Length: 286
Image (cartoon, rainbow, N blue to C red; front, side, top):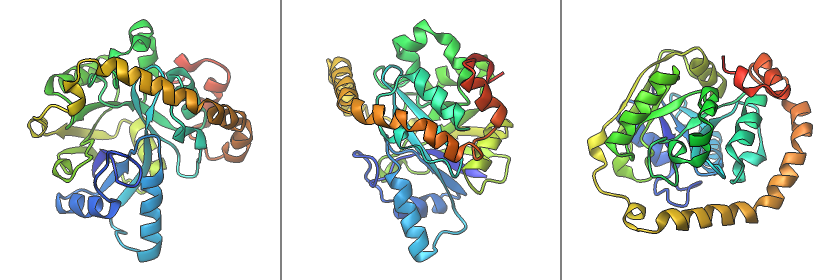
């Protein structure tokens, strides 16, 4: 099955320019079977899809998966996919440190991996001090986005090497925010995907048959890369927003125990969640 595993919509990403319905139509024209919505710290794009689907019953032959591109405090952007019935409001509140994000995602049976790990320095895991100081955290990534249309070609090469070195499944996504990038990256999955649980199982069973993006499509430099002090500005912005949302995160973190009791039977798989609850995250992915 052919999927785009990094998609931004106008409903959930401030910089997204394409509605979910338009996105689906364009991907279908390119021969895709499905997509993963990965709006920034928001599930609003997926909510818009559910509303569209429930009201029109259109696109039954196209699979839309629910994900999020999460802004960590200390390691850039991460793609997160949770089991079908797991709902964690904390994943829509940016600013958790990577270690805490990984623990929460894995306890509840989800998977995660770095988006564009060698992309813009202030957005990407492998340029962060966190990963430079603690490369052992890479063992707990469930996959690595190796092919991203909106990433420099050299960054994709480095990401592919990283996935090979750590024996991680490689995925591709267009990271499209505009129409012209839609359909420029694909992941071929040798597994029947009907929902998030199927995709999580496919990644864990290493059923990713291949992936690629058209590197040459993205030739113009992003506006942010032209600004000299952008790295510092981004840090101020990221930490600032993280600080403003600190109270909301605290409240939601307190609610996690209650959510675990509600969703523990939905978490996949139980043995991996047990390892994380017992405080041994580095054994959970082996």
